[in-house]
Length: 293
Image (cartoon, rainbow, N blue to C red; front, side, top):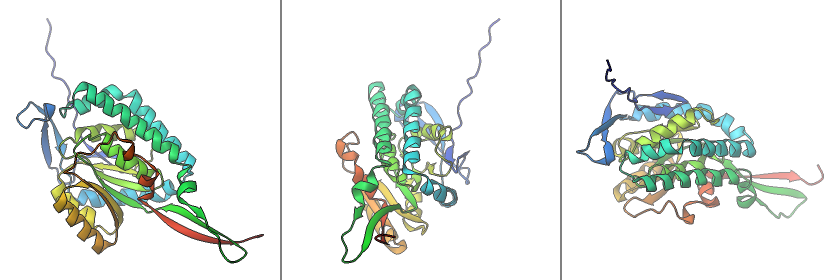
């Protein structure tokens, strides 16, 4: 006699400090199949809070020094390995995108381009310093070098369009230089970020280098803007949110790069990748050294 079986459905969790957690508040919000508000229930997603951001800052601060000390070649290897893993699990990620209403063909294209973007920035890991740094002529018997250094903890607020490719396009150039990241996933399509967290957990990327949160921008954006340990923000936001970010960032003295959410972003364009995306979140140190010593 046959028996029916209830499937064991996944409980989505966010990825912070190398661990899977629910929001400290215990709150969730529902997403539905095909991204429709009146569709079939798909999952409850953690609704993260300001306290979750503060916890993620602690995790990122703990992971930061070791990540920054690693050789550029090693960081490139780790990003390349992450690209390999995403390639191997492409069907799973395409399904995650499909749950938000992306067609199968578009989902497969987005995953493939996301893999390529990781490999692209992995290739820059041990090269960008030669491009953006400099050997400076000085009036004296000295070598004078300008060398790039990571800024520290960077906040990322992802776009709703292309929720995987956009997120990776913002994260990869930030971490390749030795920064750590706290990223707020697409509010409209958060599930691909949940699956990405599961891939990060089994990759070579140390816990705490990338921390992925889900939730509502209106609740979390002020903390991204004003938290003094977040040294920069890369965000895809609307006009009022850009103003709020700018005011909060001015008060806490942080660097902000914004893209306009109201404009259709083409994450597939060659303009969405480049060495200057790395340069946006590095600082420069000038070193003097006597010639002949």
